[in-house]
Image (cartoon, rainbow, N blue to C red):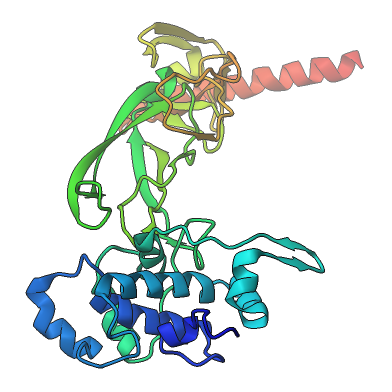
Length: 367
Protein backbone atom coordinates (compact mmCIF):
# COMPACT_ATOMS: atom_id res chain seq x y z
CA UNK A 1 0.00 0.00 0.00
CA UNK A 2 1.25 3.45 -0.90
CA UNK A 3 2.23 5.51 2.14
CA UNK A 4 0.05 8.40 0.96
CA UNK A 5 -3.05 6.23 0.91
CA UNK A 6 -5.52 6.14 3.77
CA UNK A 7 -5.37 3.08 6.02
CA UNK A 8 -9.03 2.39 6.68
CA UNK A 9 -8.23 -0.36 9.18
CA UNK A 10 -6.23 2.08 11.31
CA UNK A 11 -9.01 4.64 11.02
CA UNK A 12 -11.41 2.17 12.63
CA UNK A 13 -8.76 0.81 15.03
CA UNK A 14 -9.14 -2.79 13.83
CA UNK A 15 -6.73 -5.39 12.52
CA UNK A 16 -6.62 -6.22 8.82
CA UNK A 17 -8.01 -9.68 9.55
CA UNK A 18 -10.90 -8.30 11.62
CA UNK A 19 -14.32 -9.82 11.06
CA UNK A 20 -17.19 -7.71 9.78
CA UNK A 21 -18.74 -7.80 13.24
CA UNK A 22 -15.55 -6.45 14.78
CA UNK A 23 -15.39 -3.70 12.16
CA UNK A 24 -18.97 -2.64 12.84
CA UNK A 25 -18.51 -2.76 16.61
CA UNK A 26 -15.46 -0.53 16.35
CA UNK A 27 -17.33 1.86 14.07
CA UNK A 28 -20.21 2.02 16.51
CA UNK A 29 -17.90 2.94 19.37
CA UNK A 30 -16.25 5.70 17.34
CA UNK A 31 -19.49 6.97 15.83
CA UNK A 32 -21.08 7.14 19.25
CA UNK A 33 -18.62 9.83 20.33
CA UNK A 34 -18.12 11.56 16.96
CA UNK A 35 -21.72 11.78 15.73
CA UNK A 36 -22.62 15.49 15.53
CA UNK A 37 -26.14 14.68 16.71
CA UNK A 38 -24.99 13.27 20.04
CA UNK A 39 -26.94 14.50 23.05
CA UNK A 40 -24.69 16.74 25.14
CA UNK A 41 -26.91 16.16 28.17
CA UNK A 42 -25.52 12.62 28.35
CA UNK A 43 -21.94 13.66 27.57
CA UNK A 44 -20.56 12.54 30.91
CA UNK A 45 -22.17 9.11 31.10
CA UNK A 46 -21.63 8.43 27.44
CA UNK A 47 -17.95 9.27 27.64
CA UNK A 48 -17.48 6.59 30.28
CA UNK A 49 -19.01 3.97 28.02
CA UNK A 50 -17.01 4.80 24.91
CA UNK A 51 -13.65 5.70 26.47
CA UNK A 52 -13.88 9.15 24.93
CA UNK A 53 -10.62 10.36 26.42
CA UNK A 54 -8.66 7.58 24.74
CA UNK A 55 -6.01 9.00 22.39
CA UNK A 56 -5.81 7.57 18.86
CA UNK A 57 -3.76 8.36 15.75
CA UNK A 58 -6.72 10.46 14.51
CA UNK A 59 -6.94 12.54 17.70
CA UNK A 60 -5.05 15.55 16.21
CA UNK A 61 -7.61 15.79 13.41
CA UNK A 62 -10.73 17.92 13.77
CA UNK A 63 -13.78 15.98 14.91
CA UNK A 64 -15.55 16.69 11.64
CA UNK A 65 -12.67 15.14 9.68
CA UNK A 66 -12.59 12.12 12.00
CA UNK A 67 -16.34 11.74 11.52
CA UNK A 68 -15.88 11.80 7.74
CA UNK A 69 -13.05 9.26 7.78
CA UNK A 70 -14.77 6.64 9.97
CA UNK A 71 -17.91 6.72 7.81
CA UNK A 72 -15.89 6.36 4.62
CA UNK A 73 -13.88 3.52 6.19
CA UNK A 74 -17.05 1.73 7.30
CA UNK A 75 -18.63 2.20 3.87
CA UNK A 76 -15.63 0.41 2.35
CA UNK A 77 -14.74 -2.23 4.91
CA UNK A 78 -18.36 -3.03 5.71
CA UNK A 79 -18.92 -4.08 2.09
CA UNK A 80 -17.36 -7.43 1.20
CA UNK A 81 -16.60 -6.57 -2.44
CA UNK A 82 -15.13 -3.13 -1.72
CA UNK A 83 -13.07 -4.55 1.12
CA UNK A 84 -11.64 -7.32 -1.07
CA UNK A 85 -10.71 -4.77 -3.77
CA UNK A 86 -9.13 -2.53 -1.14
CA UNK A 87 -7.19 -5.40 0.45
CA UNK A 88 -5.79 -6.54 -2.89
CA UNK A 89 -5.29 -3.33 -4.85
CA UNK A 90 -5.21 -0.66 -2.15
CA UNK A 91 -7.04 2.63 -2.12
CA UNK A 92 -5.79 3.55 -5.60
CA UNK A 93 -7.30 0.42 -7.14
CA UNK A 94 -10.54 1.08 -5.32
CA UNK A 95 -10.74 4.69 -6.50
CA UNK A 96 -9.58 4.05 -10.08
CA UNK A 97 -11.56 0.90 -10.82
CA UNK A 98 -10.35 -2.63 -11.47
CA UNK A 99 -10.92 -5.11 -14.30
CA UNK A 100 -11.91 -8.37 -12.61
CA UNK A 101 -12.33 -11.83 -14.18
CA UNK A 102 -16.11 -11.57 -13.88
CA UNK A 103 -16.41 -7.96 -14.97
CA UNK A 104 -15.30 -4.41 -14.38
CA UNK A 105 -15.41 -2.90 -10.90
CA UNK A 106 -16.11 0.82 -11.45
CA UNK A 107 -14.21 3.50 -9.52
CA UNK A 108 -15.48 3.85 -5.98
CA UNK A 109 -16.69 7.27 -4.95
CA UNK A 110 -17.86 7.93 -1.42
CA UNK A 111 -21.36 9.35 -1.48
CA UNK A 112 -20.61 11.78 1.37
CA UNK A 113 -23.79 11.06 3.32
CA UNK A 114 -22.34 10.22 6.73
CA UNK A 115 -25.71 9.75 8.38
CA UNK A 116 -26.61 7.20 5.73
CA UNK A 117 -23.72 5.01 6.84
CA UNK A 118 -24.57 5.71 10.45
CA UNK A 119 -28.19 4.64 10.00
CA UNK A 120 -27.18 1.51 8.11
CA UNK A 121 -25.23 0.36 11.14
CA UNK A 122 -27.29 1.72 14.01
CA UNK A 123 -30.63 1.59 12.16
CA UNK A 124 -31.56 4.89 13.83
CA UNK A 125 -30.29 8.42 14.31
CA UNK A 126 -29.76 7.87 18.01
CA UNK A 127 -26.02 7.97 18.84
CA UNK A 128 -26.74 5.70 21.83
CA UNK A 129 -28.43 2.85 19.99
CA UNK A 130 -27.14 -0.50 21.24
CA UNK A 131 -23.79 0.99 22.31
CA UNK A 132 -23.63 -1.11 25.45
CA UNK A 133 -24.18 -4.25 23.35
CA UNK A 134 -21.24 -3.18 21.23
CA UNK A 135 -18.99 -2.64 24.24
CA UNK A 136 -19.72 -6.07 25.71
CA UNK A 137 -19.02 -7.71 22.38
CA UNK A 138 -22.46 -8.59 21.03
CA UNK A 139 -22.75 -8.66 17.27
CA UNK A 140 -24.43 -5.54 15.91
CA UNK A 141 -27.71 -6.01 14.08
CA UNK A 142 -27.25 -5.48 10.37
CA UNK A 143 -30.40 -3.58 9.54
CA UNK A 144 -30.98 -1.80 6.29
CA UNK A 145 -33.61 -1.76 3.60
CA UNK A 146 -31.44 0.03 1.02
CA UNK A 147 -29.46 -1.65 -1.72
CA UNK A 148 -26.31 0.25 -0.82
CA UNK A 149 -26.07 -0.73 2.83
CA UNK A 150 -24.86 -3.53 5.03
CA UNK A 151 -27.45 -6.26 5.51
CA UNK A 152 -31.22 -5.84 5.57
CA UNK A 153 -33.86 -4.66 8.00
CA UNK A 154 -35.95 -7.31 9.63
CA UNK A 155 -39.71 -7.10 9.38
CA UNK A 156 -42.08 -7.38 12.29
CA UNK A 157 -44.57 -10.27 12.11
CA UNK A 158 -48.02 -9.36 10.78
CA UNK A 159 -50.66 -7.98 13.12
CA UNK A 160 -53.83 -10.07 12.84
CA UNK A 161 -57.20 -8.47 13.55
CA UNK A 162 -60.65 -10.03 13.25
CA UNK A 163 -63.67 -8.30 11.72
CA UNK A 164 -67.12 -9.58 12.69
CA UNK A 165 -69.62 -8.74 9.93
CA UNK A 166 -73.38 -8.78 10.06
CA UNK A 167 -74.86 -11.00 7.36
CA UNK A 168 -76.60 -7.91 5.95
CA UNK A 169 -73.16 -6.35 5.39
CA UNK A 170 -71.95 -9.57 3.79
CA UNK A 171 -74.99 -9.60 1.50
CA UNK A 172 -74.75 -5.99 0.32
CA UNK A 173 -71.03 -5.33 0.77
CA UNK A 174 -69.88 -2.31 2.75
CA UNK A 175 -67.09 0.11 3.50
CA UNK A 176 -65.43 -0.29 6.89
CA UNK A 177 -63.25 2.41 8.42
CA UNK A 178 -60.76 0.59 10.60
CA UNK A 179 -59.38 2.80 13.39
CA UNK A 180 -56.06 1.75 14.86
CA UNK A 181 -53.33 3.34 16.93
CA UNK A 182 -49.75 2.97 15.81
CA UNK A 183 -46.33 4.47 16.46
CA UNK A 184 -45.48 7.13 13.86
CA UNK A 185 -42.38 9.23 13.35
CA UNK A 186 -42.46 12.78 14.66
CA UNK A 187 -41.05 15.27 12.19
CA UNK A 188 -38.71 14.19 9.40
CA UNK A 189 -35.84 12.70 11.41
CA UNK A 190 -37.23 9.14 11.57
CA UNK A 191 -36.09 8.91 15.19
CA UNK A 192 -38.78 9.87 17.69
CA UNK A 193 -42.19 8.26 17.51
CA UNK A 194 -45.53 8.81 19.16
CA UNK A 195 -48.88 7.04 19.09
CA UNK A 196 -51.24 8.39 16.45
CA UNK A 197 -54.53 7.23 15.05
CA UNK A 198 -54.54 5.70 11.58
CA UNK A 199 -57.70 5.03 9.60
CA UNK A 200 -57.66 2.26 7.01
CA UNK A 201 -60.46 2.03 4.46
CA UNK A 202 -61.64 -1.53 4.01
CA UNK A 203 -63.94 -2.23 1.07
CA UNK A 204 -65.98 -5.38 1.71
CA UNK A 205 -67.34 -6.92 -1.53
CA UNK A 206 -70.80 -8.54 -1.54
CA UNK A 207 -70.71 -12.19 -0.52
CA UNK A 208 -67.28 -12.08 1.11
CA UNK A 209 -66.40 -15.46 2.60
CA UNK A 210 -65.56 -15.98 6.24
CA UNK A 211 -61.80 -16.32 6.53
CA UNK A 212 -61.07 -13.87 3.71
CA UNK A 213 -57.94 -11.81 4.45
CA UNK A 214 -57.49 -8.11 3.76
CA UNK A 215 -53.80 -7.19 3.89
CA UNK A 216 -52.51 -3.64 4.32
CA UNK A 217 -48.81 -3.86 3.57
CA UNK A 218 -46.41 -2.26 6.10
CA UNK A 219 -49.09 -0.24 7.91
CA UNK A 220 -47.88 -1.25 11.38
CA UNK A 221 -45.79 0.68 13.91
CA UNK A 222 -43.02 2.83 12.48
CA UNK A 223 -39.63 1.85 13.88
CA UNK A 224 -36.16 2.96 12.90
CA UNK A 225 -34.77 -0.54 13.29
CA UNK A 226 -37.45 -2.61 11.57
CA UNK A 227 -39.72 -2.67 8.56
CA UNK A 228 -43.32 -1.98 9.65
CA UNK A 229 -45.49 -5.05 9.96
CA UNK A 230 -48.41 -5.83 7.70
CA UNK A 231 -51.91 -5.35 9.11
CA UNK A 232 -54.15 -8.28 8.19
CA UNK A 233 -57.90 -8.24 8.80
CA UNK A 234 -59.70 -11.60 8.76
CA UNK A 235 -63.45 -11.63 8.13
CA UNK A 236 -65.80 -13.66 10.32
CA UNK A 237 -69.59 -13.89 10.23
CA UNK A 238 -71.35 -12.42 13.24
CA UNK A 239 -74.13 -14.67 14.61
CA UNK A 240 -77.48 -13.70 13.05
CA UNK A 241 -80.89 -13.98 14.72
CA UNK A 242 -82.51 -15.62 11.68
CA UNK A 243 -79.96 -17.00 9.23
CA UNK A 244 -76.68 -18.85 9.36
CA UNK A 245 -74.19 -19.34 6.56
CA UNK A 246 -73.56 -23.00 5.74
CA UNK A 247 -69.83 -23.49 6.26
CA UNK A 248 -67.57 -22.52 3.33
CA UNK A 249 -70.51 -22.00 0.96
CA UNK A 250 -72.74 -19.17 -0.21
CA UNK A 251 -75.86 -20.95 1.06
CA UNK A 252 -77.95 -19.73 3.97
CA UNK A 253 -79.62 -21.94 6.55
CA UNK A 254 -82.93 -21.10 8.19
CA UNK A 255 -84.63 -23.28 10.81
CA UNK A 256 -88.42 -23.02 10.97
CA UNK A 257 -90.58 -24.46 13.72
CA UNK A 258 -93.82 -26.22 12.74
CA UNK A 259 -96.52 -28.00 14.69
CA UNK A 260 -97.18 -31.68 14.16
CA UNK A 261 -100.43 -30.78 12.44
CA UNK A 262 -98.64 -28.45 10.03
CA UNK A 263 -95.99 -31.05 9.36
CA UNK A 264 -98.67 -33.54 8.35
CA UNK A 265 -101.13 -31.30 6.51
CA UNK A 266 -99.03 -28.56 4.92
CA UNK A 267 -98.66 -24.87 5.63
CA UNK A 268 -97.11 -21.63 4.41
CA UNK A 269 -95.18 -18.80 6.05
CA UNK A 270 -93.47 -15.49 5.23
CA UNK A 271 -89.74 -14.93 5.68
CA UNK A 272 -87.92 -11.58 5.77
CA UNK A 273 -84.81 -11.77 3.57
CA UNK A 274 -81.45 -10.04 4.10
CA UNK A 275 -82.25 -7.48 1.39
CA UNK A 276 -85.56 -6.50 3.00
CA UNK A 277 -87.97 -8.53 0.86
CA UNK A 278 -90.77 -10.75 2.15
CA UNK A 279 -90.45 -14.27 0.79
CA UNK A 280 -93.56 -16.49 0.88
CA UNK A 281 -92.80 -20.18 1.32
CA UNK A 282 -95.40 -22.90 0.65
CA UNK A 283 -94.97 -26.43 1.97
CA UNK A 284 -97.35 -29.09 0.62
CA UNK A 285 -95.26 -32.19 1.35
CA UNK A 286 -95.31 -34.03 4.64
CA UNK A 287 -92.51 -32.67 6.78
CA UNK A 288 -90.66 -35.69 8.16
CA UNK A 289 -87.45 -35.72 10.23
CA UNK A 290 -84.58 -34.63 7.98
CA UNK A 291 -86.88 -32.92 5.46
CA UNK A 292 -85.45 -29.73 3.92
CA UNK A 293 -86.67 -27.16 1.46
CA UNK A 294 -84.11 -25.58 -0.89
CA UNK A 295 -84.92 -22.29 -2.60
CA UNK A 296 -82.51 -21.46 -5.40
CA UNK A 297 -80.90 -18.02 -5.57
CA UNK A 298 -81.97 -16.82 -2.13
CA UNK A 299 -78.60 -17.20 -0.45
CA UNK A 300 -75.57 -14.90 -0.41
CA UNK A 301 -73.92 -13.41 -3.51
CA UNK A 302 -71.04 -15.49 -4.82
CA UNK A 303 -67.65 -13.85 -4.45
CA UNK A 304 -64.27 -15.38 -5.28
CA UNK A 305 -62.16 -12.41 -4.15
CA UNK A 306 -59.77 -13.90 -1.58
CA UNK A 307 -57.45 -10.92 -1.00
CA UNK A 308 -58.01 -7.19 -1.44
CA UNK A 309 -56.05 -4.05 -0.67
CA UNK A 310 -56.99 -0.69 0.74
CA UNK A 311 -58.52 0.67 -2.47
CA UNK A 312 -61.56 2.84 -1.85
CA UNK A 313 -63.09 1.75 -5.15
CA UNK A 314 -65.70 -0.99 -4.62
CA UNK A 315 -64.44 -4.21 -6.23
CA UNK A 316 -66.78 -5.92 -8.64
CA UNK A 317 -68.23 -9.27 -7.69
CA UNK A 318 -66.86 -12.19 -9.66
CA UNK A 319 -70.37 -13.44 -10.39
CA UNK A 320 -73.93 -12.18 -10.12
CA UNK A 321 -75.09 -15.63 -9.00
CA UNK A 322 -76.37 -16.29 -5.52
CA UNK A 323 -76.27 -19.27 -3.24
CA UNK A 324 -79.40 -21.07 -2.08
CA UNK A 325 -81.62 -20.81 0.97
CA UNK A 326 -81.91 -24.12 2.80
CA UNK A 327 -84.85 -24.43 5.20
CA UNK A 328 -84.85 -27.10 7.88
CA UNK A 329 -87.86 -27.81 10.02
CA UNK A 330 -88.13 -28.45 13.70
CA UNK A 331 -91.35 -30.28 14.53
CA UNK A 332 -93.00 -29.27 17.78
CA UNK A 333 -94.86 -32.20 19.32
CA UNK A 334 -97.82 -31.69 21.67
CA UNK A 335 -96.94 -32.03 25.32
CA UNK A 336 -100.31 -33.54 26.29
CA UNK A 337 -103.00 -35.75 24.70
CA UNK A 338 -106.20 -36.86 26.39
CA UNK A 339 -107.34 -40.50 26.27
CA UNK A 340 -109.84 -39.72 23.52
CA UNK A 341 -107.22 -37.86 21.51
CA UNK A 342 -104.81 -40.76 21.83
CA UNK A 343 -107.55 -43.20 20.73
CA UNK A 344 -108.38 -41.09 17.70
CA UNK A 345 -104.70 -40.74 16.86
CA UNK A 346 -104.20 -44.53 16.99
CA UNK A 347 -107.24 -45.04 14.77
CA UNK A 348 -105.98 -42.42 12.31
CA UNK A 349 -102.54 -43.99 11.97
CA UNK A 350 -104.06 -47.49 11.75
CA UNK A 351 -106.30 -46.35 8.90
CA UNK A 352 -103.32 -44.62 7.30
CA UNK A 353 -101.25 -47.83 7.47
CA UNK A 354 -104.10 -49.79 5.89
CA UNK A 355 -104.39 -47.30 3.04
CA UNK A 356 -100.64 -47.39 2.44
CA UNK A 357 -100.73 -51.21 2.34
CA UNK A 358 -103.57 -51.20 -0.20
CA UNK A 359 -101.63 -48.80 -2.39
CA UNK A 360 -98.55 -50.99 -2.16
CA UNK A 361 -100.51 -54.12 -3.11
CA UNK A 362 -102.12 -52.32 -6.02
CA UNK A 363 -98.77 -51.17 -7.34
CA UNK A 364 -97.24 -54.65 -7.02
CA UNK A 365 -100.23 -56.16 -8.87
CA UNK A 366 -99.74 -53.79 -11.77
CA UNK A 367 -96.21 -55.11 -12.29
